[in-house]
Image (cartoon, rainbow, N blue to C red; front, side, top):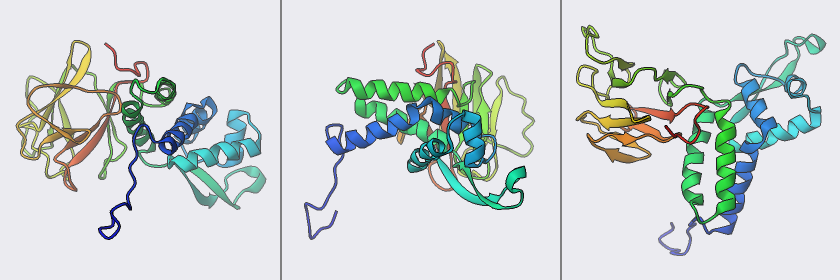
Amino acid sequence: MNPERPDDRTILTSSDPEFISELSEYLDVLASPIRLQILSFIGTKPRTVRQISHEIATSYENTKKHLTKLLSLGIIRKEIGVSDEPVNMGQPVFYYKLVPDGLNHAAYNLTLFSQVAGTSNPDLSKQVIAAQTGLHTILPARPGFVIMNGSEQGRMIELTEPVYRVGRIEEGWNGISPEPALLLNDEYRSVSRVSRPHAWVKKQAGFWTLADGNSKGGTYINGRPIGHDPVVLQDGDRIELSPGTLGITFTFHSGNTNPNHTP
């Protein structure tokens, strides 16, 4: 806000027509089965328009239109590379690839959008649910966390045990404890050592929960600090252990067979 122009500000609320329109367009892009198929296809390796067109059985021109919409969301990007196709081997071409952690950011956005839509806008709520359901078909199948920063960005940590201590790897720690551990790289120096866990992850009554372990840097869910009492995790939740450059950020995924996180 400009102090010399007190009215020079932008406020977006769930009743702002322009915001609602843009949000609806965003949701339409993610709810398209064809675009989800594209995201799944380029998630394994960068692809050209021709390769994508062949995979989704859609015309070259329509494929470009779908890619343009995905580019507008910031989920994918276009880069120049050298073709490995026989028809133009060695020639410069454009490749499309997923932005690192792009799908996880999209899932997080959908969580926020569901709060905006609430119960006051049923049509928008339906769009959010459709987009969430579609996105879950290409996200990890099992519950877990995806690291969103540092050298381990993109690493998926699957949750297969009922309880975990969460902390930074520790020299001399023999790993002997009643529960398994989610060990984090030493670069996340603000995170507590695993012998005195920064946080605890537990499955209770069919829900995954998170609790702080009396850490110095704190544990946050979607920007809000939590304490020792377990908090139920919702799909797309953004988790921070010691927020900052030396902390770590995760996104929680409940698994693509359970998009609404019900037990």
